[in-house]
Length: 51
Image (cartoon, rainbow, N blue to C red; front, side):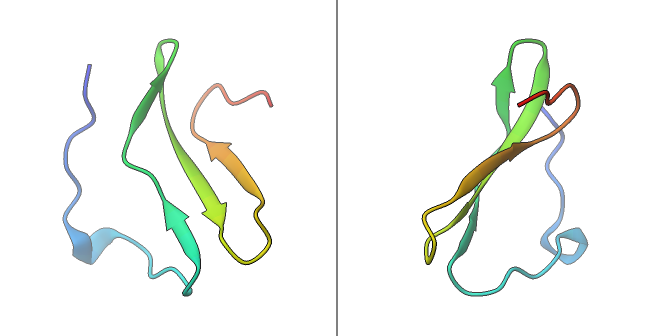
């Protein structure tokens, strides 16, 4: 299963140093990884996220 492509005009602007991954499968869910390159912290967002 792949997520439909979202036009860039619908994506929020991110501040410099924040990276957003492409859609990834985590079990049956589609998630994204977000990383702050300044602090080195990262987290996963998407449905079914429990960590």
